[in-house]
Length: 130
Image: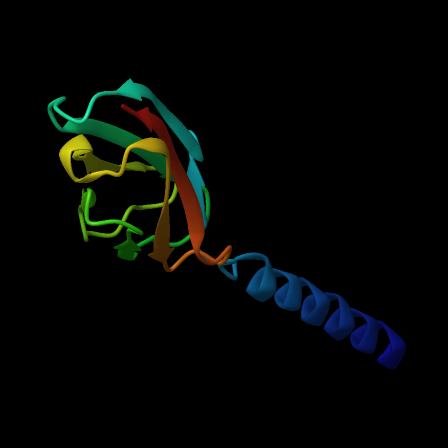
């Protein structure tokens, strides 16, 4: 009888442990539709180029974009600072001003800082400015 009681306590204890740890969140994660955006051929007197770059929260807790750093004053980024829930999507609104960009091959990196476990994500913008 005593062995049966100990066996039942062990089974219940293991089941409880699995229950507690099975639902523990793993964190937020971010996935972009594209990581390299080719703007093609642009003239210096062209209008500003407006892009919408989508991303998804593939994690299991809310994701927050905390900062987006650009490598040039010719590029600006606007984004919503509200949390993106698991399974939901968000957008980075990117503006590139060819008038402020140097002529020739154009490569600029956006550093996307967020609460994602994967850390800082780099997005590359490229173009040919004539």
